[in-house]
Figure 1 (cartoon, rainbow, N blue to C red):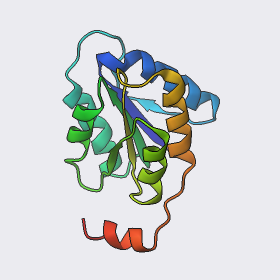
Figure 2: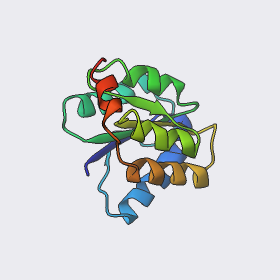
Figure 3: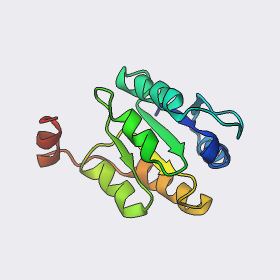
Figure 4: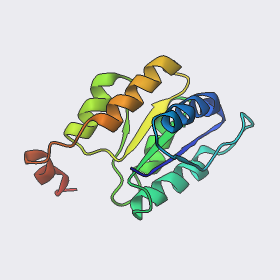
Length: 140
């Protein structure tokens, strides 16, 4: 599976931990920034990730910012993007099962790295159920 990821300065450290985890698991995530904890404007990075997913260059994406709220708002403005803010395991699983979320968003100042890695694992491993849920997605 192809993955693209990005973050703002508030979640730089968490992004690096997640990127290392994904690489260890055999993924080759494309990192579009931020590349340090120096202040950046999160919409620029959120737009890059969302555009890549929207246009089909990557199957899924991961976005991180301080709370996850800003990145969610940016990403969900793009066609074919279903970005889900998930700061717990249940939300991560349901975002995939029922909503076929293709961008995972998390808040780097909201959750710790151990939980974040479990959320990523759950989100990547949970399949979309289709059926009645596909019918609802078709109404978007």
